[in-house]
Length: 111
Ligand SMILES: O=C(O)CCC(=O)C(=O)O
Ligand SMILES: [Fe+2]
View 1: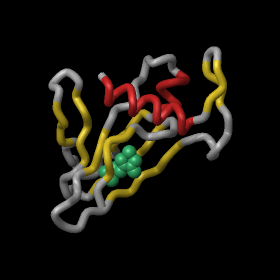
View 2: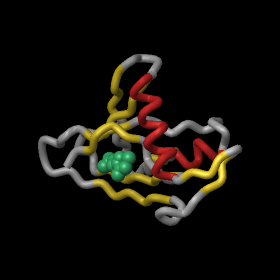
View 3: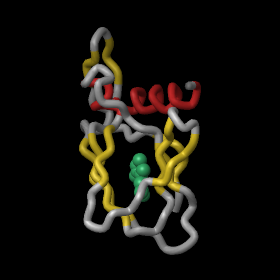
View 4: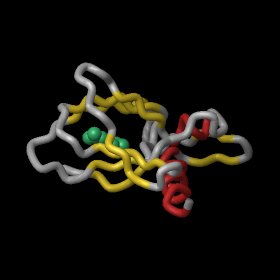
């Protein structure tokens, strides 16, 4: 199954993939999608919208997607994130991890 362009909602995502291609990350520099290489045994660490917010933008949550795979594709993701619906304090405002993720995805889309 594929996944549309998004940023992960939480703080960190740890991802194991099986080598079947599909995962891509957006490169503003290249103005294009880039395949995330599969390296056996390597765990992909992805910054999510919460960590971006907490770090004041020092770490940025990358826009990524998963193309519909041609064959069987399996991935295992561990999401480190605040409990659903729990409010988080960011400088000056109170907002939820979901709205950070939507805002960040939107910002990427309009960049
Ligand atoms: O399956 C993948 O490689 C990534 C999935 C993903 O981006 C997600 O679950 O947030
Ligand atoms: Fe994701």
